[in-house]
Image (cartoon, rainbow, N blue to C red; front, side, top):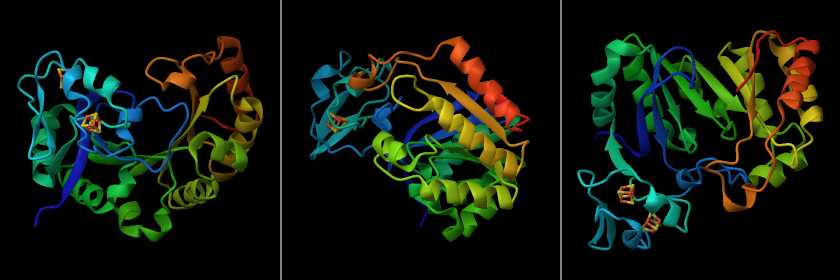
Amino acid sequence: MMLKGYVHKILPFSAVDGPGNRTVIFLQGCNFDCIYCHNPETIRRCSHCGECIKACPYAALGLERGKILWKQDLCRDCDGCIRACPYDSSPKVQTMDVEEIMDHIRKVGGFISGVTLSGGECTLQAAFVIEIFKRVREMGLTAFLDTNGFVPLQQMKEMALTMDMAMVDLKSYDGEEHRMLTGKGNEPVIENIRYLAEIHKLYEIRTVIVPELLDNRKNVDKISRLIATLDPNIRYKLIWFRSVGVREGAKIWKEPTEELMKELVAIAEKNGCKNVVMV
Ligand code: SF4
Ligand code: SF4
């Protein structure tokens, strides 16, 4: 039987989700609940409550046998339904099999260097991800994983062996701060980072900089020291917190200044990181 996954959306081309031009598959469902989440509609699976139907100005939503029905041909992607969903979900999530995913990839295969599996948290659908990675590599494309790092990859060796490389969020080096931010501790994340570096599959670590919420200087100092001891060439990406698209409570937080971002880049470089970027 063909494996199926819950797919939030497919982006045919992206220049910011790994090296080169990539197709990105965003899977639905996440095991974190970050208070600054920029895509909260990827967190939960739809409960089919029907609340979003009246928010659609194009009659692209309905209920059929108790399940939400998305009429893709009528949809104009205005995202009114996502804004109306009280449950951090989207009625546009599709159940797709591996072959349907590969059809999307084959259409653009000549124009991309690889495929990135993202989310939500895609490691929660490991078997689906592994099968896609296998097929992607058979096409001569690279397979990248974008993860929050919480699911232990050491216990999912097939995933680690099947992909080319991974990009991992380390949202805070401080365990308590990480728990406050995401709802979970950071020990498994740091374990995964060590493991991926050891098998030479860690492409990038990312930290979002939020001035009013996190001890950013301490975080960047500690995380960059960790990177420098693992491999100073691992890319460290410092991400500017933006208030667009975040949850209501996070909209009032200030974005970092350019001065702060440059100071943090300088801290990471001084600690030995050779590939620090801010975006
Ligand atoms: S994104 Fe599509 S389904 Fe959602 S409200 Fe807009 S038109 Fe309707
Ligand atoms: S997307 Fe949200 S509002 Fe719409 S049916 Fe699903 S849970 Fe309800």
